[in-house]
Image (cartoon, rainbow, N blue to C red):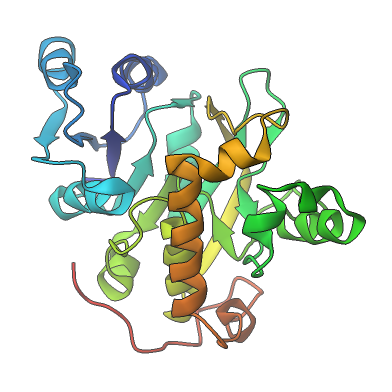
Length: 286
């Protein structure tokens, strides 16, 4: 089995349906399995999957386990050489899945890879980043972000200076569409379920680097992402006071507490597509 695609769903039945249709229409020339994990949506998603996509493996969680916990159910069930975490608001393009697998096959030092993500109008969506500093969560959710120093910090975080015309080693990848090598997964371990939502992907990418595996953004392969960030016009106190806003800041606190004082692990790993050279104690809890 070449590729296991894990799609975590929570109250996104319509988006999931279009996501699965897009994979079908792309006719990927790979041996693959699709695993849908329903995080106790209660919106009829399991019935829709059984009825319209009988070839898809369905896992029904007994409760909402969050992003990390739900995806871990799928990762444990996956049998492919590579495991892909995909959000239900992703639309794959023809050849995109093959492109990711081919690049991983050609570069055994890569543990985690992601395609370029675009908005529905094909404009670029930021999906690869430098590791956040302590101020970034606040700059992005409060009026502080409008100040010149905060704008500079956010531009650095978003890698606006990066050349996206070729494969790019990055600190971390957005978890909406990422592919992990099975061998690397066995060393790095599952997503950290202490992060219910947000920062789980930052943490995971960091652990790949810590284990000596490269994390790579592949712009020659693209997918469409229907993700919508909180409107820039929204009142900042409404965003900060929302449930998702509070979860985001709580996850940020957990992340910075976990890695307080630790150096960037990417800087201790080779950067020329050579074999990984740095390995630290890792979680083998698959």
